[in-house]
Image (cartoon, rainbow, N blue to C red; front, side, top):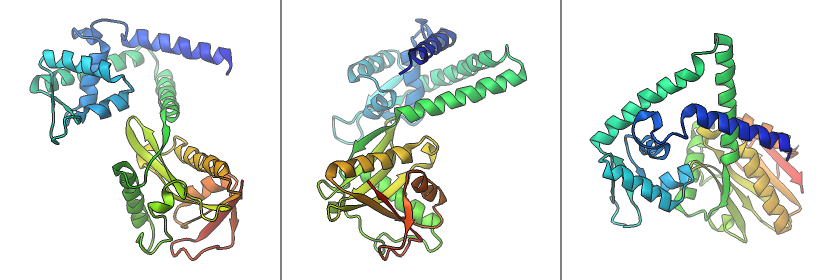
Length: 293
């Protein structure tokens, strides 16, 4: 990695933390540090599970507990259990907490405007565009890929979203029972693998590999949440599956796709897959692809 790039990132970090007041003990002059203020924002009007809060902010559980205790002592937050499972706690804003969050929102708008006010319109557009690009790239770098058992609630969530999107987009709808199989057993090691992409503590994509005969594998169940598209997640999921295929000893991969999924076709072409003659009787397929590993 280029040392000048690292130095630039550090300069950027110093400039931003100073401008937003992250170093101040009383963030936005409300008497508490940035960490507590950020938790009020993330808990939101509907509340959030504490473990999801930890994952979203990538914070140590002990630190999150200390922040929540401080907010509880101020009468802004309460934690509760709605499931009967003592391990599942939910953080909820009190009425006072909701009012304080609204105050932070107004002050945060003022702070954001302070970035733009000194600039002329052209430079404002440049700054906003640059910030959007930085946000997009940081999000792309924050995506994590994790092997997941296909029968877990997380996996079922992804697959349900995948099936629902196909049903909406395919001209004839989509019935998983008519499609070529990708059963839980076929997506469980060593017969196969199911990977989930995570961003900000939420599952935002998935993909599966069927090992098959040990020579030719199949890529299945490729899906990315609409909110996370444009971050290169589909490429990373496909690369993960290809790496797993090589480590398993497969010599080639195959997949098929519907003609309405033009973005998927473009991805496969970019990743070196060649369109070939149909190799199965998948009723929803119009294009068949193959890649030698």
